[in-house]
Amino acid sequence: MKKTILSISGKPGLYSLVSRSKNGLIVEILDDTHKRITAFASDRVTSLADIAMYTDEEDMPLGYIMAALRDMEGGKTASINWRKAGATELQEYFAKFVPNFDRDRVHNSDIKKLLQWYDIMVNAGITDFEETLKPTNGDNIDDRNEEEEQA
Image 1 (tube, rainbow, N blue to C red):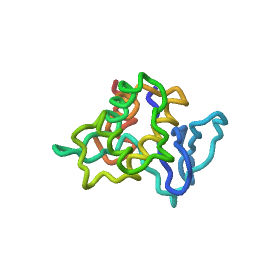
Image 2: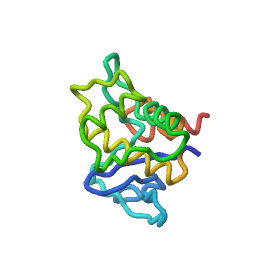
Image 3: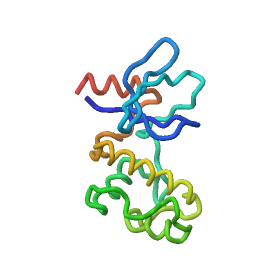
């Protein structure tokens, strides 16, 4: 079954969707604890499958960007210390696997967040980014579940 990877605004890390509850979503933290928490309806929850980054041509889905990074790093965590890297260093590193990124609209904080998420997912054993972060066809996570059932 395909995992749905989520980011919850105001909470560190990434989460895997486990189930739904009356009050929100039940999610599991992608770390060694695998602790389950509830993401309430008031939380801003975003599926990584629905995120794209700006390039000079068209927006590139996050799954393809992470796959390019994985291929460059050989499936290991990022070789750059993104916490301490300067702006120029971050942009040069990002340009190695997304050479046509829009330098005006992709901010250094976006690159840092991408690298942080990449490291979390690799450490959690998730490296099939093309499939795990495959963009959804609709506006709702239910559309993704329907696709899974039809497959």
